[in-house]
Length: 183
Image (tube, rainbow, N blue to C red):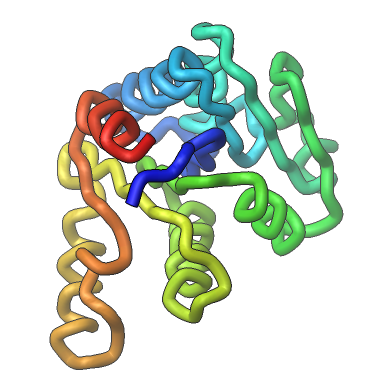
């Protein structure tokens, strides 16, 4: 089934991590979305991979919506160059807005917050509260261990198989192809 992707939520780290490939991929992912006229929706930070993705979208003339809890915004983490920044009172409210404002979820490398957001979306899809596609960009095998673990859970009959939950790609060119096939 084809659908119109107007906005993509990018879940990724507020830190850059140790691999320069992570930052490059975050920037290029944002830039691709901006070039295609797809709004980038994300966590609102100027730092780390989040900031790189937003900077990429902005560099391509794209629209960016950030959603940041007030507690983090007050620590001066807010990206001041994006077109729209919503400050909210909790992480739960942040995730609600991110999920409601997005047509597709793109998962880039990140830490516990990224995993929390990924599992929230997968759970909502599994339980029928949502049916929005999830794409994991598995840069340099970053998510391979997680995908293996999710396959093990499915083997034990405790969850659907990962191939039924999300698509896995390994580079930005694959993201471009996936978007083209599905719009």
